[in-house]
Amino acid sequence: MKGFERDTCNVPMTQCTFVDMFAREAFTLWCDFAELPELPAQLESNYEVWKQMSTSWDPSQNVNLISKPPTTQP
Image 1 (cartoon, rainbow, N blue to C red):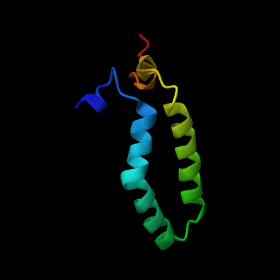
Image 2: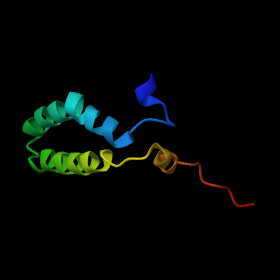
Image 3: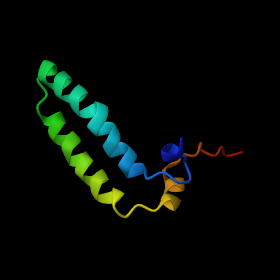
């Protein structure tokens, strides 16, 4: 899937899409049930940061998001 290729995708945009399509509704329902009103506000704050990053994202930055296993010391 072209939109999700590691070398070419706009990671911040994929995060915004995930929030739009799934996380926002799930968070709202869960937080209403668990009485955690601060979590949806944090989700929206994170969303705004991802949204701002998405406009100038260069896919070459994706390599910085991949976690590398810790190196072992001999």
